[in-house]
Length: 300
Image (cartoon, rainbow, N blue to C red; front, side, top):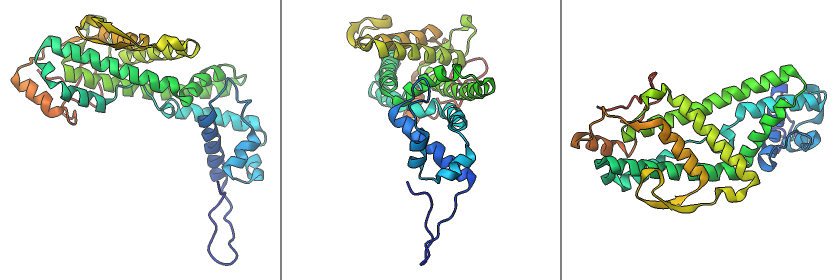
C-alpha cells in the first residue's frame, strides 16, 4: 500500500507520516497478515520486515518507533487482544434475523405451550449449528485461541498483565452481547431464568460461550465430532431434525437455565403483540437484562 498521499503540482512532494500514523499502519498491516494466515502459539512466523513492507511505511520510521521487533510484537499482542474476539466473525449469539424469519414462518406455534417449546428448541438448534460452523472455519477464531496460549507464555509480567486485561475486556464485551441476545429470545418466548438457580443472563452467556469453545477445540482434533445426524425426540420435542453434538450441547445448556414464565398469559392480545413485534423485535427486545435476570420486554 502507498505510504503517503502525493501532493498536486510538479514537485509531487510527499508528506512525512507522523509517528502515530506509522505505528497505526504497521500494526494494521500485521493484523491483516495474521487475519490471512492465523496466529501460531508465538509470533515467530511473522516477519517484521514483511510487516514493514506490507504497511508501506518508511523502515527508519518504524525502527524509531520500535527499536527492535520484540517491542513491536508486544504492542501487536495488545492490539490483537483488544480486537478479539469481535474480529473472529462469530460471537456465539443467535442470528436474530434468522429468529424473526423462522418465528414468522411458524407463527401459529406460539398459540400452545408445546408449539412454543418446539419452536424454541428449533431456533436454538439452528443458531448453534450456524455459530459452530462459522467459528470452526474461522482463521481469526483460531488466532484468538492461540493468543490465550501465547500470552500465558510471556516472560514479561507487565506485558502479560496488559494482554490479560485487554482479553478480559474483550471477553466481557462478547459476554454482554450473548447475554442480551438470549434475554431477547427469552422475552420473545415468554421464558425466564429458573429462580432456584439464582443466576443471570450474564452467567448463562458465560456457560454457553465456554460450551461452544470446548466443542470447537475438540473438533479441531476430531473433525467427525461435529457430524450431523438425524435425531427425534430431542429435548422433549416431537420433531426429527439434524443434530450435532455442539448443537445439542448448546441447546441443552440454554434450556437448563430457562423455563416458561408463569406470569406470561398467552392470550389473543399477547399473541398479537408478538406477531407485531417479530418484524423488528422492538417491543420484546431489551437492550440489556434487568438486575433480577428478567428480560425488560417481559409481558404479563
